[in-house]
Image (cartoon, rainbow, N blue to C red; front, side):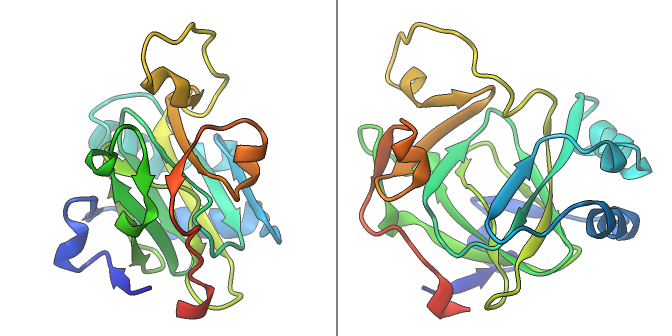
Length: 211
């Protein structure tokens, strides 16, 4: 699979690089206080990250004053497995290069996505990127073979918290997996085995050979 750069023109429909932010202290804290598991772990809110000056700056500037949470997604991964989306943009910044597997919400056909629509984009270490609300995304992938990643994840506060108790009124409601998190799983994923809707067809992409 071709791995493009977030600085390539092809990234423009999916997100953008955010400039003007000093990420040095954020990355040092991420490296110091968060683990690097063999698999992939996600924590929605990390107090040490949220205590940094950049947390208030991102809330005020990047989110226009909305309350946000700063957490992380760390580990080792080369597979797609699932795609998700939120009602708001997500911000990511990593201590090393990492790769995002992305697609567009409007690529869905009758609520199903062919994984042939997925593209891979490399985010350089220390670069802050915005992933638009209309972009399907999931866990980061390694930026180099076996390297692993530590990636800050900023989202509106409450995102990925408990799923609201609702009675579905449309097909999208059936994808709601957590607070502000709509999920599409591949049949090969552990999420599918937990009951997530299987809405990804085609190959469960693995970029291990492309790193």
